[in-house]
Image (cartoon, rainbow, N blue to C red; front, side):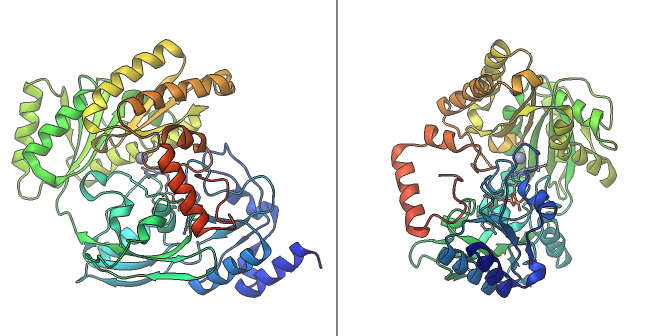
Length: 465
Ligand code: FAD
Ligand code: ZN
């Protein structure tokens, strides 16, 4: 028996034959990233059914020197969840670990395994009259383990924070197969270092997240969905500041969307698109928990129109209209995929510098690559935009020009004190930028942490650092 055959036999011994896939066709969706741009090859895919099995698989890999690529829903957008091209790496899928171990309405918490699909967690929380606020367009297929490993953001960060803020406790399998058992639901705990934070956002390079204690909230009550037209993209920030001052922390989402992004949705996605005729190039889609006080919002919108901060506002009259507006927003990424080649960026700047960023970036890119069409949308309330470009094939195929475009954007972001990766992570596609834009001390500490927690370098090698 060869070394590989022995490894696979031992693997089947741990997880059972049905949970180990080696067939190339069956592996295909797991070695290809969502945009269909990156492809890898895998030795096999293992789907353990519980934490003990994850630990045993990790121990086996450590003995055999086999690298592990953890995978959740494989909706990540920077190649973090797919193996390299060697065909020697093992995909560790958490999909079978999809139990909610407990849910405690009084404690406002639930313990969920890493493979739980995000939308299922939202539904289960709602079933006990509670709210799990993490929400993003991929919520029907991404998994909470993936969300935590990327410190996902999404549309509700402005009120509830990123994935990191939703975690009270974490269970993690370490590189030597030991289990860090931190599934507590404490809101306060100053007994030593907060170890769970190391694994959140580390994209599977420091440990395998197997379960988490998640924070729940009261349901937000009646919310109002509105689409406003802005005279200029820069007005989004002043509008938000005014709204916050008037309505307090009741803004659940505040998303900037460019007209071109909506046109792509109308062109490519069947039942989504602008629900009414609106002129203008820039829109904000917002969700506000108005509660009993819907008059305050109406008054604010009237005043904002009078003062010229916004040109027009449409308030959804019922749930169906609200859902249509959100369907349109959530369909943008998919629509851009059908439009053709793209260059994607997921940047953040301080909210107060957003207006300057939008104006300067548009000017520079227009001068540099007039054929690139910006498809801008995202979480402007968090200072985070998906600054994507739809580009002709000849530009997409010219690596030098693509790099120049990206550098133009990232250099400006850095100048304004922002980040080249706001919520999608680094994965394999943004590694070079991490080296370029994070300081030497930061990088050195990251490398030392990596060496300490994964001395053999078997946890998602080639990603992040
Ligand atoms: P995967 O893609 O499977 O994995 C992502 C990374 O985490 C990989 O490095 C993987 O190795 C690691 N990983 C996965 N599970 C584990 C685990 N249990 N333990 C350790 N490491 C693990 N992201 C946002 O933040 N906000 C958005 O608004 C948003 N919108 C999106 C819209 C669309 C249409 C799509 C396709 C993606 C979007 N994303 C967004 C990106 C993506 O959905 C998120 O990054 C999500 O958190 C990834 O979850 P996943 O389960 O698919 O993880
Ligand atoms: Zn996003």
